[in-house]
Length: 305
Image 1 (cartoon, helix red, strand yellow):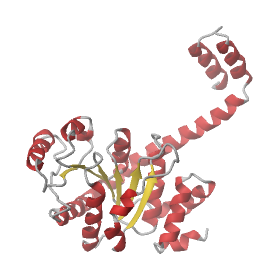
Image 2: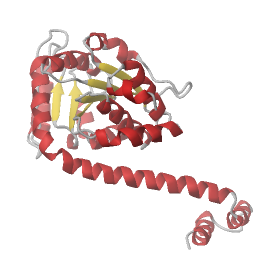
Image 3: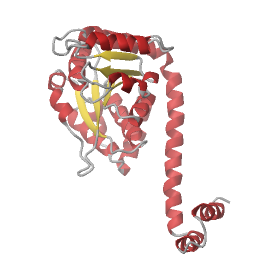
Image 4: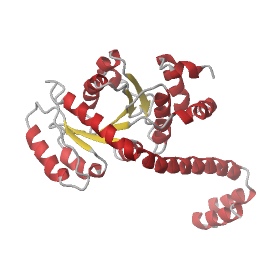
């Protein structure tokens, strides 16, 4: 595995190659992960999410630069909504993050592929590659789109939800379930009209919740609040170190269950293709001599003895 020495040195070509391998779930990915696994699990993962247009990419660009000044070595994984036509990811984020890339931050777009669970697998393993390459923290950026956010909050040690005054449905979006996941609720583009009302609304609606989140204001345009936000993240990273191992135990349990269930599903798929009981009851179902539930029960009993 000639990739590993270069990966350990943090060489960009090796990182890009390794992430492509684990993203595409190639057989080599198992070999890579087997060799690096012991040296992973120590970096803090920061999830940054929020509605499209909240200005996350520009915010992360500036924040990554500020975090490097605080003696950290951030990397960014941007989870992109996938094009259903080409399967490719939208790479606009990378364009908006040139400043942090120039300062040494590693940035990579990952296609969300529209599948629950696939995001988690791809992310977990990409995070491990970046950890092995010496990055900490690893920032995950995603568009606020329901299920993906919950998946990311399950992987992240710190979750940041970003809003801006011109995302008209901001407060409705908050009500739609983002209230449970944030450690920080950030009002971005605070130079725009309406930012004070949005800040008050977020504070009134979420600030009093049990999580007691931090609610800062930033403006990328005016470069205000960015260094304070970076310091907040650094402080949270230091605090979360204490509880990280407990959370990791739970995450590894979830991951192991996911992998086992996926393995069983694949195995079952193969068995069904060649199973006589399955083909017999499929024919009955197609003739409408039996309903799908009864057919499924009979087939399941024949397989799981």
